Image (cartoon, rainbow, N blue to C red; front, side, top):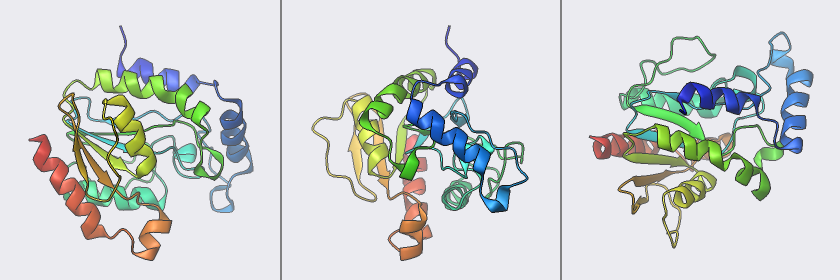
Length: 220
């Protein structure tokens, strides 16, 4: 039988996409100067959180010097700083920071995942690479049996969620948009907490808070 632990191992061991494997491993060797003394994860990154989650938070892929370094999604980068502060304020996380595996972060009622599990060059996985990863997300969704809400961080994650939950035709993506899937899941959209969005003010902390407050209300 499948399990979240088995899924995590399969994701960490996966070498199906040569371009992604080469990139994640190159980054893990060359490193960023600020992290030169750290051992990078350099593998596929599994989801994490509460196995009884009612809310799935779905991103694009691990960041090269974030999750590809730390081995935990949205951990060790500025996108994660924004995400976990918002999740903490909404009651989904026991602390507002996520800097490394083993830092004490625990999620309650939420699970954090990504459509693609290896860091892609320029944050742009190919359609073939996304298709190779799709079974991981499908298995994850099947194992998270209490899901009621999916928070999609960005248009890429939104497209992936619509594919998995049978939303056709796909309504236009927009911050705060909500779509009811035929499966009973509600998809809630947010701009991705990337520096491109947060530095320019396209996404503000109150905007992100509103999305997670809505997700919490829908999940009750």
